[in-house]
Length: 160
Length: 160
Length: 160
Image 1: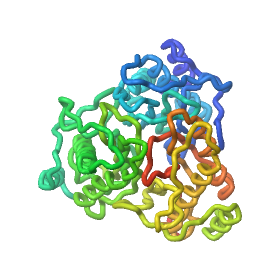
Image 2 (image 1 turned 90 degrees about the vertical axis):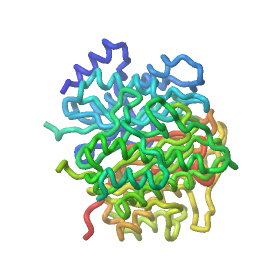
Image 3 (image 1 turned 90 degrees about the horizontal axis):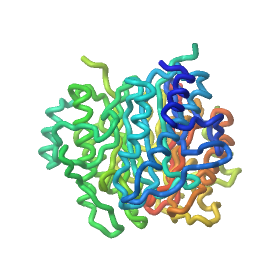
Image 4 (image 1 turned 45 degrees about the horizontal axis):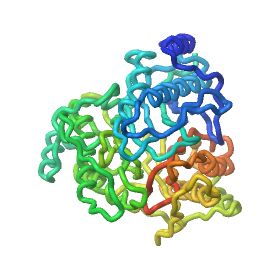
């Protein structure tokens, strides 16, 4: 599996911002590993801990690039959170699932195209091991007004 | 446990359409089996791969039959997806969970009655092994304008 | 780990109502234990089986106390449901995750502060073992018009 450095280099090469240290924004943990499964708390597209957030609500006819960039950033944050917890991303055996909550108006229908940006990135980073099941849905609001929130689950090996 | 043919026959006898081959509508997998758990990507009530979808948004005073039929179709699709992945549904040991996202106006309150259609069908098909935990909630939009989206998790045996 | 009586006493001391017996409101199970994980069906803030429910929809500038109380009640219900299934809460090894669906207007942004009420309570009750990952999001409607719905997953030991 790729190292954390490999992953962060690839993200940078693809133009995806890699957040520095991530801290929870409340009384929860970022990652919990139990019986070989690592679950990551829902990540919103926050660029840094000062709070800069990709925010907004998608309208039906709106261009999707901002939301797709937000989805990529949510995934990048989840991977940074995993890196912090695991020590190195080489411990990731495979991704399991993504769940994407898209902040969208009632007539928005292209949730799948937004989440494909995260799914394509997962596969670009991990290859076959990046494949995953997924759910995409529209929500009426998200913390801080975020455009997208993503949950990630991955299978991980024991510490080396 | 019932075979796939048993399940598909019962669905047909109950008037629930059984979709033919299902393909993902994006860069995700339909089903992922890990450590004896099969998780199915969120299914919307699509009748076939040409894209015919039971769409709409539930109002508070609306009749629930269309939404209940959509919930049954989501479950049927999830079972077809499991069949495709497992080879045969006899490998299903028991259902674990359903999560139902109902496309609904803010004053809609009968999410449970919509999801009961899927839960009742699960129990009709699998008996005691069809029992499950469940969450039902209302969302502001769904992919393609779908009426309902359902996630299914099941415990499965190793291949025979 | 604390006994059920310890937990219920602490909830009462903190002013959190402890619902008496809980029954499902549809064709699902309240709790399912599989491979050492107990998952609880989504709980809404219902005070009793007669149906009294903390209902409403959060506006952006609204005081959060009612919603925070609702989040605490959802958690209390999930723990009563676990108690009913397990016999005693001493079998809980640790909490794993909370997922919180907040019934909120499109411009509401403080989902995390609502869910912190449940997270803080979890840690007050279980200490380090109460730590968990979490997702918080806004939904357009919930069963019965509930203010909040919470899903809980916990790791549990085999019966004594």
